[in-house]
Image (cartoon, rainbow, N blue to C red; front, side):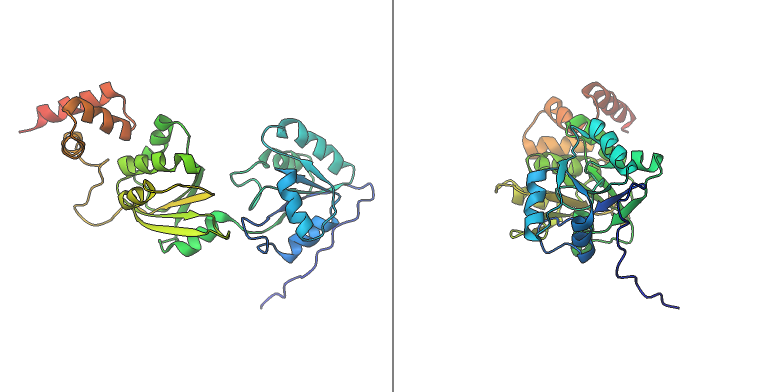
Length: 298
């Protein structure tokens, strides 16, 4: 039996009883990508906690929402979260929003939600746009199974180590990345995971929305010739299943060093350094592995 959807869920009045926390999804680019329910909730709550009050104010102005705002971001959430929980304990209804998309998902908000749950304050999600879900739908990659990983570490060594843990993943991998780190991130993806099918989405739902599709190597060649700006989502396809195929990270170290020597005109020592960095190894560990492979060579 099909259940008829409930169209309205009026907020409980703030009459001294316990309040509520609404987790409200906001547009990721186009201001029209907001639900009718989200607009109503933002109008009816007593306070809106925003990652950036100036950015949220543009959205509120567009829909004539006059609700007061307060800042809530990664630098003040340690003190602001308890303040907001106290207000909700006294009956206030508060909406949490971030600059774009669903709060808490790679954005501030976990501390507030966790604290509200601990104090038995109702936490009510108001679903909205999400960049990585939109990109998955339009990517053309298999999305029956995927793994969302948010932002990789900004430091190269830590990033390669994190990627190495995903080497055998059989799911589409989903990342967010900053424009100024995108080329380094793709170089590490190619070095650690191999030259996989990849989709890069930029400025999703905005005026300059763009999807780039191809191998990691092909995308690197394109991106090295242009400026990279905007919000970036990267989808990396699952490991190839064809027999006999091996990514550079799976190939013997000595073969990968020979390839780098030929392609980049380096001597063995220089190529060893490049390959070691790509695989997240120290130079000494890579050298020991190379010597072991040479001694085992017939």
